[in-house]
Amino acid sequence: MPRWRWFSAVVFAVILCGVPAAPAAAHDATTKAHAEVTGTGTNVRVVLDLEYDLLMKSAWLYAEAYEAKERAEQLRQLKINHDAVTEYVTRRFEVAYDDKPCAPTTVGDADVRLRGKATFAVLTLAYACAGEAGGTHAISSALFPDAESFVHNTETLVRYELDGTKGSAVLDAKSPTLRIGERHASQQVWEFFLLGAEHLLFGIDHIFFLLALLIGARRLRDVVVTASAFTAAHSITFLLAAMGIVDVPGAIVEPVIAASIIVVAVANLLGREEDKLGKWRLPIVFAFGLVHGLGFAGALDIDESGSWELLLSLLSFNVGIEVTQLVLIAVLFPLLVLLRRTSAARWAVAAMSASIVVVSLYWFFDRIPLPL
Image (cartoon, rainbow, N blue to C red; front, side, top):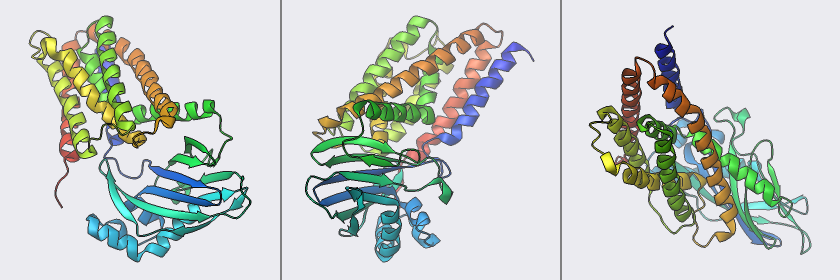
């Protein structure tokens, strides 16, 4: 096989294999549960955010419940299926005090809210713990395990303020329990570093944007300057949004992310000589980087203003994104350089850019919220 065809086949394989991993992917991929745990002594309050349809499926409810799309109907289904939902959640999510299980009860009616394009059920639980003052809490999550076959590799992002300690942690099948005060800062750093790396690797839209930027870069200096502008921009909005200082709805952020990919890829199709972006390329990359930062913050979902005690988690998550981005650049840019040395360079670059435009157009229209 000629060298240019081999490179083209590799690039198209990467693109086609990545498309199903877009944010609009079905539940045969994975999910993240969110838990906010607060309290003192024997009284603990837990607020859980769980994907609505996945929760209703896992509670083994009928299609009418998990296929509900309108907010009013989802709230009605949560109310009439209160017992089944509560039984599932309290069996999979536990709080202990001095190694003794705390008794859970629900508080008020469940609510629903949007996270990106997915609807999440918001459940509030109160745990009554038995024991003497000065004990230690433990939090365990086995929500949406692989055995249920609906999703795999579920992670529960826990934010806690217990026993005079504030922090955050990631619980999964390998490490399902958090004992307050026992996890070291280094473990917290590693957990959120991996979470950031995972988000970039499985966020195919961010990878497409990065690939489109690399296609338009001719020299190593172009790559360094462009990547630095993108990094600086998304780091700014990531931290501001994650701290609750900036709040932009996902219904706006997600379509704009798709549009940013389209703009950069179309600029590549125009060619260097006819590039309409010209000297505006760097400012445009910076502006779109600001939008991508909002998308990264939405994935982590630490959005309470004044949560500076979680700064370590935020920085670790961001560093995970940056390191993974650098690794991808180190792998992809040399391949693109070799591709440009072939006789089919112009055709291959145009084909890659066109493919990115087509997929991103689909994402753009798919992410625009439509009235029910």
